[in-house]
Image (tube, rainbow, N blue to C red; front, side, top):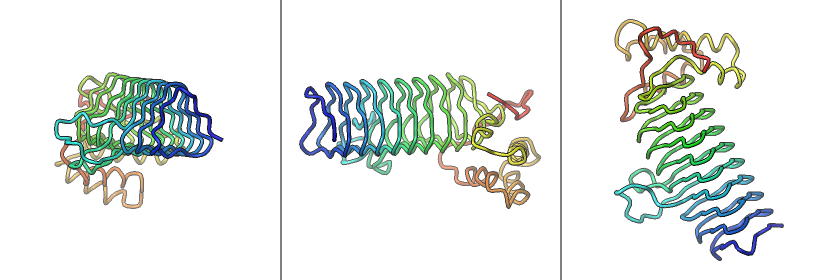
Length: 271
């Protein structure tokens, strides 16, 4: 049985699942769909064509499904889709998509958004992603599974961040970030692998070593990066982790790759 505070304002068109808790002064719009066992603690604002997966918890003053912060948006019918088992803390904001960007902003399952994080229009956020306080995505950003976004980091629009990446606090991400790596700096540069993240996911020492060798070959080997990537693809053809790195490079869109620090780059960061 759902529990709805009498001060909440829920439009009659909203779809509310089973065993949903909606606390004081929440406002739910007419085209919102809330899954079973969700919790909205207080003062939560959900609007637009927004779908929230089961068992997601949303804290005070979060605002979800608002119109894009884009001068190109002209009121099109676009959407925000949030997965299951997410934890969305205070003052988090997420926008619906734009027609030119595919029409939908997507957040995966089991994501954790700390206070004041922001997901802009047309972003695609994977599963098991963590946003620390004030981590911010520009429009059209893609974030892979098992990635950690450090506090106060900012990601430029259209950037792709691969799976298993750790983005340091206060880092500005202007270019694509290769899977399994670590990036820090006011204009982010790679400082090696996200070894801690890989170990926590159960990667074996041998798997980590293969990813490390591929990383070194891609960025520090002879020839152009296209040639180095082709050589890595041939050498590690049976390694699915390395091949995900190769595919990430080959599927580049509008942004180039973030590069490592050249001076003293060992490629073995434990940050």
